[in-house]
Length: 231
Image (cartoon, rainbow, N blue to C red; front, side, top):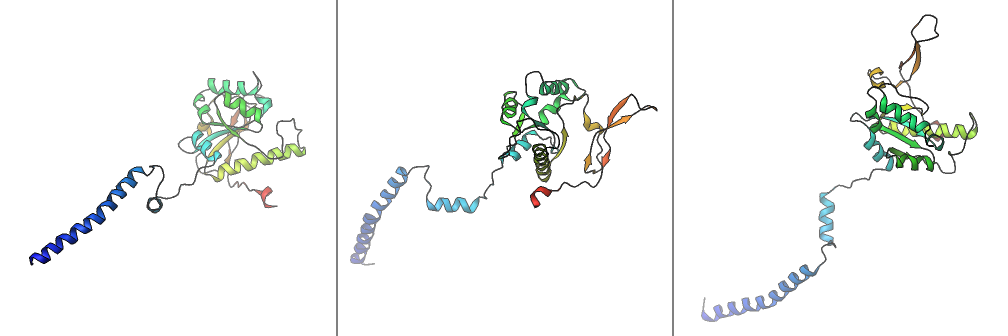
């Protein structure tokens, strides 16, 4: 390489450096001043390519996950304002669970489904597991008579709710509130794949007048259909 060409090469490189250096400085300054919480399109593209969208859980699913045992089993009771008055059904029900044979732990796996706002508020005050079963256009807080339209609507709403719980892959014991639990019922249940088991009276003596206990006979092949939603 001649002196002339060598000098020309140096001059070319110097010129290139003079042009590129300010650009690099601007890039560094821009990067330092760019807000950290504002992602660029490139990072948004990279983030979207490397992650999968997570569908948020609905309220019921979140509640069920928090209540259910490891085998996705829970206890469900319907709660209305008549049961939450001071020293009434709810208090007696909880007392029986607290004093029964191997039943106290079930309170942690008991979901109270409130059908009116007052019942829901009382349930939350007691720090129980609660779910507000709101039904648009229907007021379940009022007294309803057996087999009236309001009563039938309430029963259908309850049945559809329980069907929703089943479809989500959960098993449950459904209990009324006007009962007292004296012992853990799970030891009485069959585990041979029965679809439905219900409590009945079992009489131990010959004349059928005393010594009645509760049994849980299995019923096979029971399917719960949403007939009300198919019309």
